[in-house]
Structures are given as structure tokens and as C-alpha cells.
Image 1 (cartoon, rainbow, N blue to C red):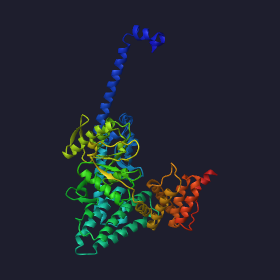
Image 2 (image 1 turned 135 degrees about the vertical axis):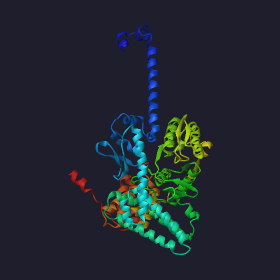
Image 3 (image 1 turned 90 degrees about the vertical axis):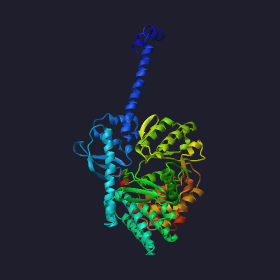
Length: 559
């Protein structure tokens, strides 16, 4: 550039006469830059293979971590590396790592503190191992003490995921014990049903009291799962199921503590899955409907035969959430990728490399938006993984690299068939997945369970009213682009109703729900639709008035 400034005749004097080797210089610099880029990529790949969770980070984030000598630098990237860990608790002088903390503020301490010494990928690998080792120890201890303590006292002592898995293990044992005793005591199953109903009522009563936020979230999940467990036992009583060999029981997701293996074993139909001890924090759980049950059974069967799962259906039917909820049940991380036309086989291959080496699940949303040319290559990549699982290989050759294969890996795709811009999957790709057709979810059951988990006594009646209101609104109100009357807005209203229930415990439950429905929906309606929606509310809640309650803090600050 200095030469260009001195000689205005750039073409002849700078590039030829004065700079005969200029082209060669530029080509040399370009080649050196390419070599540096390849060296950097190779260096980062070596770090990713040493600690495969790094595959979920961008190159910029990974360079920030590798370029720092302070262990605390990892803190801001933890939620990208772990499912629910927001921070690690460092000891004095950052000499040890002593605990994991979730985004909600839940924490548990490591049995053996980890020293952040050496390369970051090495000590982060030790943190990963200690997380699983500690959670295994905590779960084992909790399962041992479950039957020796009062259930509510036991729940208060446990972190969220331990309370859930401990309850599920003991519920599986209790039901199978009833099957053994039912030939002697014909009322054994009815007694179990009464006991489970009492357990749910005690949790609902507890959640209406003033308890800490984290315990409330834990009990919310427990109520949702306990209601499903009670419904299963209720169906056994109604249909006179008397054996553990009945398909109605075999088809349930069952959790056992295998004494010989000293570990948790998850069974459904002919499949046996592993519990993976990924820290889940206080993640919410789905209400389990008959649709969810059938979907989960298909997915676990597919995993048993080393295949993937392919839920398909309209938007808002719970395709992705069902896959994620099953992963939560197995304490396994599920990474969701939104697919589009710009996604190529190299990017997908890198994604698969991370899943193969971590054993995580990958859920690829709207998979049929990817170009057909890319899908044909992707089918070969997925087939390579599945062949490795069938052969029980510990190492497979993937994208010209030998990498470790963790057998807990699962690959799932979701599709919206019939939508614009979606292509049909090639036949060789279809053969690698078990199809699942998702339809409209059971909204009444979902509303009822969520209202119950928020502490409502009259959940059954209120759930029917709420679903009816949304059905009538979708049919009678004008068609607007921003209107939505599906599962997502219903869930938002239910969460708000729970907040109002706790804030105004003396208010009648129907007034609480009416107020939540009015306040959450009215702001989004156009002017012409407001009178009709108010009339629908009055028809479903006749003679009821819920006065508006302003935000006093906001009012005081505005003045």
C-alpha cells in the first residue's frame, strides 16, 4: 500500500515493474493464512475430542476459555456446556470446585471436590465425572431413606431431580409389590390407590402454603408425575389388572434400583435404558397424557432397536417437548437444533460428532426443511452411528476420524408435514427412524393437572371451563395473525393463575382463574373482539366479577 501511494500508476509500476513478486507474496500470505486456519481448527478439534461438551460452544467462546488462565472464566459458558448448571462454587483462591448451582438457585455439593489444575479440558472432564458420581451417591442415599422417613420431610431434604427419581423408583416397587399381594388381599390395589390419592392431596395442601420457591417448583413436578401415577393405578383398579405381566404395566416407563449393578435401570416394554445422572436442576416436566404415553413408548422402543424417532404433526402438539421430557426422565441432555435450508452436511456432521462422543440426544426440529441433496449424505452419517450401536463398537470412523461412541446417544427428528418449503424425506433416511404421528393434545387433562400442581382444589371443573373458553374464542373471534389459542398461551395463563392463587389465597378459585384469563388475553385482542370475549367469560363464569388489582409498587414509582 505504501508503494501504491508513491506510484499512482498502480497496475504497471506497483504490480509489475516495482513489485514483480507482489502476486507471489500475496499468494504466499494467503496460503499461510489457510494453513493457520487449518492448524487452529485442528487444535480446537483436539480440545473438543478431549472434552466433547465443547462441541456445543462456538469457536469464539472456546478460544476465550482456552486463552484464559483463570478457572473462573468457564462460569459464563456453563449453561451451554451443562443442561442446568449455571455456576460452579469455587473454594478459597479458586483452588477447588466444591458444588454445582442451577439457574434457579438450587445447589448440591460434590462428594470429592475437584481441583482445577492442568488443561481446562482435563479438569472440566473431572467436573463432569464428579457430577455423575455425586448424583449417583445422593440418589442411592435418598432411595435408601425414602421408606424410613415421612414423605414430605424426605422431599424437603432432596434436590428436585433426586426427589423425582426416588419417588418413581419407590412407586414402581409399590405397584409390583401390590401385584404380588393381590392374590391374597383383593383390596390391595384399591388401598394403593387411596394411599397415592392421599399423597397427592398432601402435596397440593403443602403447595398452597408459604414455602420457598425452589421447593414449590420441585413439588409442582412431583404433583404432575404423581397424578399420572395415580391415574395408572386407577385404571388397574377399573380394569381389574392383576399381574405385572399385563401389557398395561409393561408399557409404562418403570424405574428400578438394580442391586447387582448398584445403579438405576429404566424399563419399558422390551427395552432397558440407562439413567445418566446429568444434573437437571428444577426443570419443569410435561403433563403426561395418553398421547404422550404412546409417543414415549414408540421412542423407547426405537432406542431399543438402535433407531431414531420421528414425531410428526402440526405445530403446538408437543413433538419436541415430548422428546426433551423423556430425556429429562432419563437424566440425559437433549440438544435441540432448528433446521433450515442453509444447514449443510458438514455442520450436521459436526453436530453428530458432539452427540456421538457425549452420548447426548439430538432433536432436529423441522428436519424436512433441509435440502434433499444434504439429506442423502446425512442418512449415511446416521447409518454409520446406528451400525456402531448395533455392533456395540466403542470407536467408530466418522467423517474420516476415529471417535468414541457413547451408547446412550439418540437422534430424533420432528416434522410439520404439508407445510410450505418442506421436502419429503428420502426412503433410505425414513428407514432409520420410527415414525410417530402427533395429534391435538388432551388440553383438559393438561389444564387439570397443572391447576392441581398450582394448588387448585376444583381443578377438574375449572379446566373444562378454560378449554371451552379457548375453543369458543378460536371459533368466534376474528382471524388475526397474532391470535393463538393453543397449548402455549394456555400454559402461560395457568402459571399466572398459580401466582395469583398464592398472592390472594382468600380469593375464590373460579375468580382467580377468571382474572388470569381476562388479564392475560384482553391486551392482545383488537377492539372489535373485546366485547365478545367478555361475554364468553360471563357465560362460563356467570355472575362472577373479578376486580382489577393494580401493581402498587409501579403506581408508587410512577407518582
